[in-house]
Amino acid sequence: MSHANLSTGLQQHFIGQRQRLREAAQRILGCPHRADDVVQDAYLKLREVADPCGIHQPHAYLLRMVRNLAIDRHRRSSFENDVFTVEEAGQDMYAEAQGPEAIAIGRQTLALVSRALESLPARTQRAFELYRFGGLSQREIAAELGISATLVNFLIRDALAACRQHLAPASSS
Image 1 (cartoon, rainbow, N blue to C red):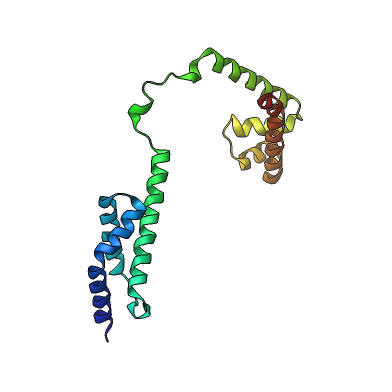
Image 2 (cartoon, rainbow, N blue to C red):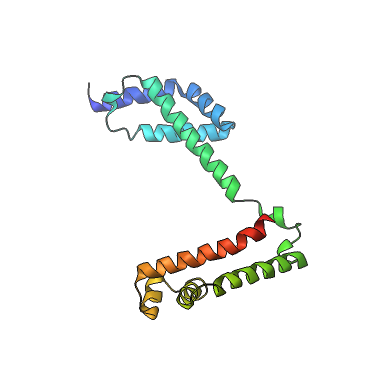
């Protein structure tokens, strides 16, 4: 049997099982329109199958293909719903970041970070300031301070650890 005949046979099997495949996708997605899209995508992928000879159980193969595509579509949709929101949803909310309490908390946090940096050696402070506030890369900082990029990495890490340590008691109270 030629490759074209096997491929056509698999496509015919797909067409015969289309309704079952759609129902399987709909159980995962919960929407008949999205299930139709998944079945259509599966059919297009099926046409790209390089070696249909290796498919011994076409129904199981097709069902697995549709199921995997439906799960991928569901995951992507869930992710997009978590990340993106309707713009109007936040219009009626009060901007807490501008309130007096938020300003006071920000100032306290800044004071704690400032104290943490003051407790560090001058070179560590300078490396951290150039990295976080100056926007320089670690290589640029290394060139400016005359030290290795690896040492710059350690200095920045130490400064961040000191900041976290100074902030930890404030966040636990």
